[in-house]
Amino acid sequence: METKNKDYVRFLENKIVVAEEYGFESDGIIGDLLPHAKPITQWCLKGGRRAIFASFGLTKTVMQLELAYQCIRKENKPFLICMPLGVVGEFKRDNKEFFNAELDLEYITDTDNIDNYDVKIYVTNYERVRKGDIDPAKFCGVSFDEASILRNLATETTNYVLTYFKKVQYRFVATATPTPNDYIEILNYADFLGVIDRGHALTRFFKRDSTSAGNLTLYENKEQEFWQWVSTWAVFINKPSDLGFSDEGYNLPKLHIHEIEVENLTDEVIINKKGEPILFKDVTKSLVDVSREKADTVELRVNKTFEIVSQYPFRAWVIFTFWLRFKILTSSYRI
Image 1 (tube, rainbow, N blue to C red):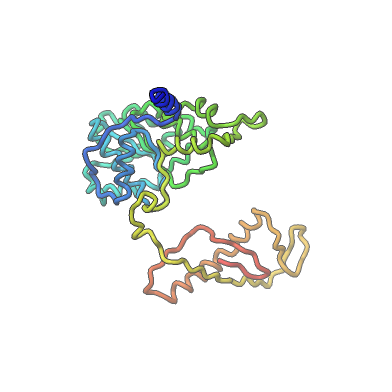
Image 2: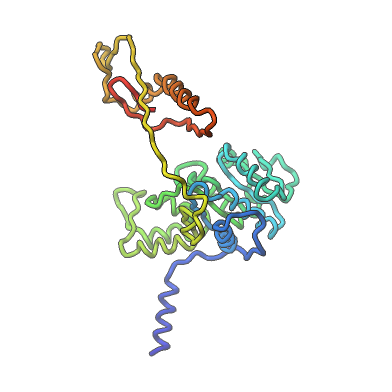
């Protein structure tokens, strides 16, 4: 009876979907990684095809560079990191700071322009990937930074990546903004990493919706199993303590919000949408109207910001250039 029970347990365990390991054990961390980043990187290397879903500030850039260094040392072949163009500078800076720039980091726009590839880290932007200018066969591994570009199957970038980059031996994705309830995005990551067949995942975990092919709903009895499977190839971390490490340096002081009203008084005649003169501006505005109001009042708010900063000349300031919460009042605006 005991033998039969063991056989049955083994039978059930074989039914569990677990991502296979395609990587290798590292000999030791190369860069100056933070404590929480070291086990994540080692886990990714052992898996060979893994996802890092880490919140902002948890050093995803450094972890990807460590993965590149390790794969290059293992295979003696260059490594590619794809990213938005504006992030290239950050990777170059971190390569110098955390790795003392032991390997060169070179930005490329077309793999055909390079005859002999040195064993180093190459970076490129997604526009080059979308255009098909990058041949993945030249690299031992690839990491996609800001990998949320894979969330939509209808884009040229996603289709090209899933078609050609799946041939690379070591594959990694990293983003701070995965959408947990967007199962298409999760499956796209899994498809790229090669941890499961898309058709298998769809039939195993999701109900069919005859009215909408893209509407995926988990079976109620499969929800726990689905996320357990995801955890075998993706790490979700919001702060170091999620993995048992100290949050020192990540616990920010309480944020105090001061709402400043800026008056927008005018002697001009106020006209409504119908071209009729009115006493007060219409506060029921469309998205286009709100955008126009923001443009019309930008000078007022910039001047007010400069006035506030000038009152404390010896303080350090961080000024965000995107529009903050915007609320229309009768004759004033909040910056």
